[in-house]
Every structure is written in C-alpha cells, then in structure tokens.
Length: 196
Image (cartoon, rainbow, N blue to C red; front, side):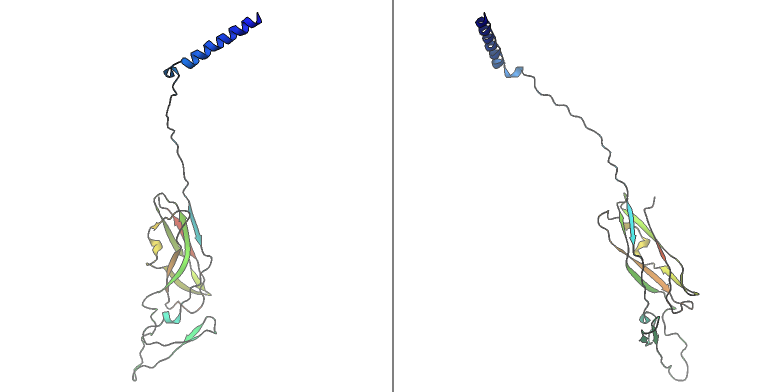
C-alpha cells in the first residue's frame, strides 16, 4: 500500500510540474506601475549677520589741513603731534587769508574694512545705515558726518552666507572754529537691514 501511495504521489508531482512548465508565458501576472507626486515645501530662513570692527583710529595729517603756500614742520614728540610753520606777506600789507583749507570743505577720511554683512535676502539686496554719535575731546566737540560718497547710502547686493565683501565707511570731518587739536572720541552706529 505504501508503495502505491508513493507512486501515486510521484505521478501527481510529475503532472503538476508539467502543467507549470507547459503554461504559456502570457498567462503570468504582469507587474503594474503606479506613479504619484508629493508636494514638498522647503523653508529656508532669512539670515542677516553683521560684523564690525571694535575700534578705528582716524588720523588727520597736517598735509590735509593746509592750502596753497603753507609749509609745516612736524613735531611728533608731542601728544597729539604738532606742526609749526611761518611765512611772510608780500610788501607791507599783511595777508589775512588763512593758509588752511579746512574752512572750505570737510576732511574726507576712510575707515577701511569697517564692517561686513552676510545675507541671503530674498530680494537680493540689503541696506546699511550709519549714524555718527557725538565726538568730544574734553569740553570740545567735533562735527563728524557720513560722507555723501559713502556707498552704504545705496542698496547693497546680498552675496549669500558663505562669501561677503568687507565695506568701508567714509567720514566727513569738519574742522572749523570748534575743531580744536586733540583726540576726539565718539561712536558710529551701524544698522544693517532689509527694507520691507
């Protein structure tokens, strides 16, 4: 009985194998493809990073104060350094016109590489506003303004977050009757922003 069962099982397996092997290829289930898209919103934050120097030393030289015909001799051993000079008027009439040019225009001084801004502004630009404080030496005041040639008065191109260009600050220092010799201390407030 056992041998008949094994023979029957072997016969059944042979028939089943034959059916599988002889089945046509187009009878198999073909793979299917479905495609969908996902909407993804990536939000990049806006960054505006300002870095400034801590201290700037602005030195006005005697040569920046004289006009035509004035010759000065410097004495750097004094604090602040001093200069002296003299000349003669022609004939017996004293020339009362100042040999110094400070009365006609302010002295323009540049603070090189004073600040730098990293920005990924979506408008591609940012602005900088520089405000001078009060400059004093003892009881004396000095007029210091941002020069009209300073580039920070215009819109500045945002260069991104990895590379940026350092910017200068250009000052107009007015030396008039109040501009006495000495070291004047004051501040410049630098505001970097993107207008709305």
